[in-house]
Length: 462
Ligand SMILES: NC(=O)c1ccc[n+]([C@@H]2O[C@H](COP(=O)([O-])OP(=O)(O)OC[C@H]3O[C@@H](n4cnc5c(N)ncnc54)[C@H](O)[C@@H]3O)[C@@H](O)[C@H]2O)c1
Image (cartoon, rainbow, N blue to C red):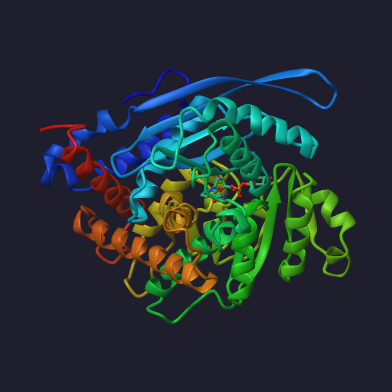
């Protein structure tokens, strides 16, 4: 494995994939695939660079920028840019590694990559953010292109930042091309791209509910705990509300809000407006009229999971390792039946063990226990619609909202079905009443698709 010392997040992501594969019959049936592991774990290329800019006080600032071009067997490198003070190579390698298999799960021609900048944008002016984006792209523009590497947003990089990054690329390269996704709608962006990760997460979870309950249940009437309050959390919440579910929580890095009666669409809208100006949930619930009548409870410094009361569905949508083993047990005790990650690696290894252990404890096929879906499957709607944005850019066409939404739904359901069937095909589990493991299924499908392309292209040989 290519983990360097002190790469805990990357090691965790690698171990999750490898243990999934080892706890199946894949290597027994096809020993050649084992040879792929050491090769696929090493990024094809890592670019690390200095980014300097002048802040609003006229002082020089400097921060390390990165792009991990992990794997191009399936297509151009594709994956988001994260601007956050925690960004380091371990986190970007974990995200890039996940992205390889996630992108393969979309069924599109996309390789895997990830990048970012170790910076805290909070409190900086629009002008300074523009200067940071231009400074970052000054170097990154040498290494990306519509057929080479197509970044998108991630934590800290939304529509505003993608706009500045795109403008910088265009001016440095004198080329208007689909080099970033998540672009503005009037200059090459795709309808539904902002919504795609959150909506896709809900479509995937809907497929889980539909399968597990044999079509008897849906989101209607379900109590849904969500964490985060950024892009993914907001659109997941809005879709759950549209489908008749009750959103009982949201959170940010400072605390959580809990609402027994359900957070409303107006409240989500208020959060969406305020977050662009870096307001905390605590400030928002004090300042916005949407929170004046429908009161919510604020818990400083808390994550939602142990505070949500009875709950049917949990959708972690903030950041990695945001559900601990203890919190997973609390969710199980609170009645959770479906857990699907909007965030990447939202659950710790201990939490996954709790959810998977519960799944395997199923006593009768008619009463399945908890079902867990990993982010690389349940949150891949974002990159899938990025793939559709690239297709529209190549065609110089704009597809309708309905067309993109239908395509997104189809991609999410296909991913769910592929994971389910492959988990069954390679299962070595004794409990035949339990639902198939979606974490094993997703890792198997993604890995086999990438491995086959790598064999075909001579990246690895028998
Ligand atoms: N944007 C996408 O299309 C996309 C696609 C797939 C996966 N993801 C993943 O979804 C997650 C959220 O991304 P986003 O695009 O919504 O970002 P965002 O910047 O819009 O929002 C991030 C949210 O996470 C919260 N957060 C950040 N660090 C936190 C911490 N340490 N503790 C608690 N909360 C914290 C922030 O307060 C914010 O609410 C990330 O794991 C990201 O990798 C995003």
